[in-house]
Length: 336
Image (cartoon, rainbow, N blue to C red; front, side, top):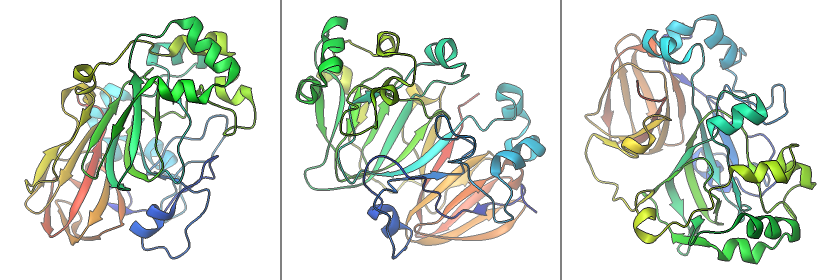
């Protein structure tokens, strides 16, 4: 019965403005990668900005996950989550394969999103690097404080070199994680493949819109840059401050490893899980990265899992354990 057992989901790749998708296809054993399919929205109850349904995930029955959750919220989400967040998973998970460098952009906070987009959520996000080219980098936070007039001037002139040059460029490799608070200007470099957790919106203020988006309005989401740039974190991020966001982690062999820690818990959580993992009941998303194994669930019995599989995990499936040589990421909503 849907809602009481983990559900394997197919790829869900809405067309985007930048290239990528080969790494997603390789992970999912799909022989036909899409040139402009760089994002796989997994177990999504969120739409692309301005769209009515694009981005939503469907269950094997054809029912949208959003509708299934709305119809049986306690089954899918559990009573504690329902009391805190209502009938809303409060989470969006993506596989993101950057076939080219993404533009410099940032995301609004909850407060900014409520004031200007009538949205309950802004878009704090975080990345788990699962694949990276040898020279792969990401760009995170300004190195020094930047005056508002300077940021405005860069955007007016679309000075890509100045924007990128003002950001911290950080080498990354598989296993690294990056926490990206709302407002933090950033860009993902070509050759970086991530599992991305975020608040469930598609709100991006794209400072570097030229050669990426169709027009300037797409950059400021229709509210004008004079207003939109108010969400940008213009503070400098020193090496010590940056170390609170970027973790260079070894993959390790512990059954359950918390990937983001306390800074992210109010927004989402992620665990790397392997054989021996004991998982408490929760709505969640499972992304299998390597190996094969079995998810032994309290209510649904054995569920085989292999690299490239993605599952939505309902709360009503109950507690679970992991067996085999499987390595997976379990993505979870905010903590209580």
